[in-house]
Structures are given as C-alpha cells and as structure tokens.
Amino acid sequence: MPARPTPQPGVMQIAPYVPGRSGAGSGSTEKIAKLSSNESPLGASPKAIAALEGLGDVVASYPDGSSMALREAIAQVHGLEARCLIIGAGSDELLHLLAQTYLGEGDEAVISQFGFLVYPIVTRGAGATPVVAKDNDFCVDVDAMLGAVTQRTKVVFLANPNNPTGTYISQAELERLHAGLRPDTLLVVDSAYAEYVTADDYAAGERLVRANDNVVMVRTFSKIGLAALRIGWMYGPAHIVDALNRLRGPFNVNRAAQLAGEAAVKDVEFIARLKAHNRKWRDWLGDELNCNQIRILPSQGNFVLALFAEDGGKSAKEASKALLEAGLIVREMGAYGLPDALRISIGEDRAMRAVAKVLKGLGK
Ligand SMILES: *Cc1c(COP(=O)(O)O)cnc(C)c1O
Image (tube, rainbow, N blue to C red):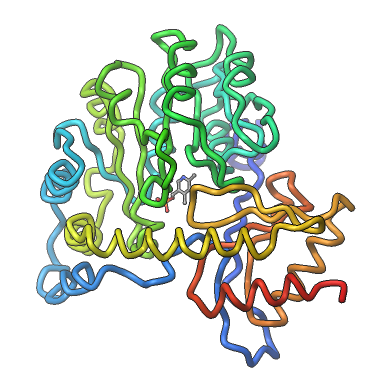
C-alpha cells in the first residue's frame, strides 16, 4: 500500500506550464512592456469595461450556469447556433473538458511538433499519450499529422494559426486533414488567433464543424482584451456540446466574464481596431528584423517568432537579456524545444520601435 495518495499515472509526466514573465525583477526603473503573453496592446473594449459597472450588486448570486446571453451574442455576431456553443473559463478549460471526455488510458492524441503546450498537458491529464507529428519548416505538415494517426488515435489537436510559430494552414489543407481522419476521431481546431488572421485562404473552422460530426472549433477572448476574465468558447456538433455540458462545472463562467464577454463580442469596431494595429506592426517588425542574423517567421497571429543563430540558445538568450534591460519582456521558447527562438507579442507602437532598435543593435 502506498504511504500517501498517489496521482494518476499521466499527471506526474506533465511538465508544468510556465506562463510568460510579467516583471523585469528588482532594480529595473524602465517602464515595462510585457510582450510575452499575446495580450491586447490596446487594453479591453471600452464597452466591455462599461458592462462591468454595477457588478457589486450581483456578486452575491450565482451566474447563469449556461451563459445563455453570452452564447446568444456570440451566435448572433458569428452567425452560429447558440445551442451548439459552450463557454469555458478560458479555452484551456474547454481543452481539458474535451480531453477528459474523449481520451483515456491507452488512447493517443496527435499534436504538431511545435503545437500549443496545453495539448500534451490535457492529454496526459486524461491518461492518454501525446503523439508528435513533425513540422515542415515550422509549419504544420498535414501529411505528417495523418501519418501519426494510429488505431488508438481519438483526438487530433490543431492550433491554426499555431502558437508559438504563428504559421497557419489553409482551408484546403484543413479540409484535407479532416478528410484523412476516421469518423470516430475528433478534430479539435483551436482558432485562438482567428481575429488576427489576414490570409485570404484561411478558415477558422465553422463550416467544417457544421458539416461534420467529429470537428469542434475552440476560440478565446484572451487575445482580444479580456485575458484576466478567462473566457473561451467552443462551437461543435450538438452531441459533443451535450457530452461536455455533463462534465462541465455547473457555474464554470463567472458573472463578470459573461457580462464583459457579451459586450466585447458585439464591439466589432474595437476588434477591427486591434486587427489593424496588429497587422501594421506585425508587417513592420518583419520588415525591420528579417536579415541574415534573425529570421522572423511569417505570422498570422498577434505575435512573431524570431529565430536566431542555431547555437544552443546562446544568441536568443543574449537577445532576450538585452530586451529585458530595455524593459521589454518577450517569451523564451526552450519549453517548446525552440531554444534559438523568442516569441514577441505585438505591442504598443513605442514597444515595437524599441524591440526593433534593441535587436538591430545586437552584436554592434
Ligand atoms: C492563448 C491560447 C489559447 C487560450 O487560452 P485561454 O485559456 O482562453 O486564455 C488557446 N489556444 C492557443 C493556441 C493559445 O495560444
């Protein structure tokens, strides 16, 4: 008999998730720009903030357990059916629910080489095994994903665009991936950065969901100004929404999140402003920094991945240190198996100019 409670076998195989750092540590006097968590550089929608007024009057009672008003607002804005939506405390919660519902011991989940780190966490948490498909030049390789599928594969996780690479696959490639899967394999399309995509041949996944019984699309409010409130949503076939709702905590989304989310999704003008700001500085940063020493991957997200010389992380670490000294916090990528890369969120104008200045001055 064990001398103390023992975690389920998959749990201790999880490498703890390390969030982006948010302070430069002691001794720093510079104004800090946090470019490590892909948050909104323009704050939250003013309408979302206004919706939080009067919250004090309602905190004593439970929120609506089905997040009905928020689901209806999302359905209206995105042209979806409210009954096929489920809201989570961040999309992280929905990814956990999907894994708990569709994965178990002996099952496998296919993920891409540099895919979002939450996928292996939720997979192992459910007792299943993550199977990694190699990328092709930092882009998801549909043939490799399909090649990684076995009889044991129950779920395929795809972030599109992907975090941290910023690369994406086209609608045609997404459909080809789906077409290669058995009908009992669930395709999870995580479109966390859909609001920032500018590519014409991209699809967030609504159509694929509607036409099939084995596809869901997961989205988030975290990258469009409401990261603190933890709001994610999933669009899926009614049978999957029903299964998740059975496992979901009955009051998983708090009242503040529901109120602000409803106002934020309707504030299409603010989201358009965010997208325009992002596009401008994403392009600008790529143009400024792409040179022989640094390669900026083409990004469809609200961040770029900068690749430095392949020297076991030495150049990337030096760049990160120089940025930090200038008050600019970016994300080191060792946890993703990318020691020679830094992920830089698109921030305010001033922060973007400062990033370019520091990185162009390296080694001079
Ligand atoms: C940020 C992100 C999420 C979202 O997380 P929340 O839990 O909604 O904050 C999901 N997937 C990817 C790929 C992300 O980068």
